[in-house]
Amino acid sequence: MARRPAPLIGALALAAMLGAALTGCATATPSSGADATPQATETPAGELTEFDAAWLDGGRQVGLVTQGSSTCIPTAEDVSYADGVLQLTLADVSDGPCTMDYVPRVSLVPVPDDVDPSANLAIEVSGDYVGEMVLPGVEGLAAESPSEQLPSAGWTTTDGTFIVLLWGSSGCPEYITTAEVSGDAAISVSLSGQPADKVCTADIAPNPQLTTVDGLVGVPDVALTLNSPGVDPYTTPILGVNGGTAG
Image (cartoon, rainbow, N blue to C red; front, side, top):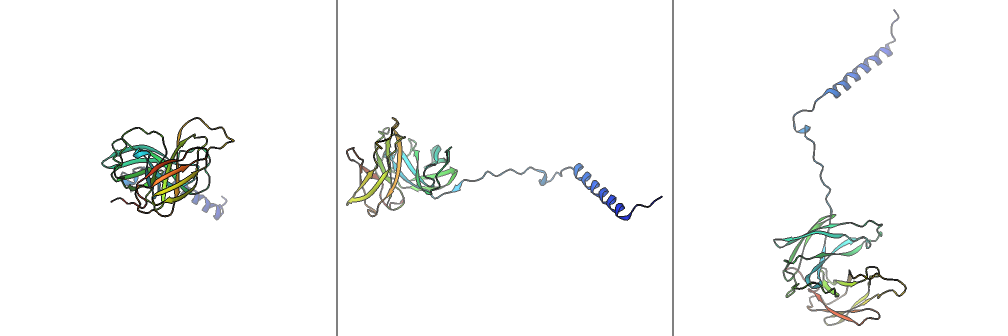
């Protein structure tokens, strides 16, 4: 009988060994130890965020400031209040493309009826943005009636920064063009006005705008005058104190 070449015999032996190994893997049963238990998949956490905020609309709303695209502003959801803490989920819900800028923008948070805006308010945020902060209360502030949808403003916890809440057509939102200190306790803001060459929707929607000025740190009861083309000036107090902290 002819002898098989040595290389061929080695190859057949190696194949037999691999087959046995694969058979062993296929018939092996998981052990009863901890390794046999499926591992839970951890839910990704949201982006750790440093928030800023201000009281608006007579204490009926809080303007929550984050950084990101100016055209894709996160939405506040699942707002609740218990034991002195306002809890909410902040979600990115935009379906369209977002601009590539990175700017401060304002998300409006409705304030539950049992919140006292004259007291410090702890805010805890989860969702796509995660973090917490304390918004100083405003002495004497009480939201006792429904919103009249009139312009309002409030200082954030960042020196020189405040939010102006405007109301108007969602299709033609106004924006702030200039802001300057105009007196010992006064600020004047110029608005863009309504475009003359555009048809605006007939709805009335909130339009929060963030702006800054120099000075007036620690000055209470600052009056804000809004100036829009073709409209009489409107004056409203800026809630809180520039540079104020939670005591």
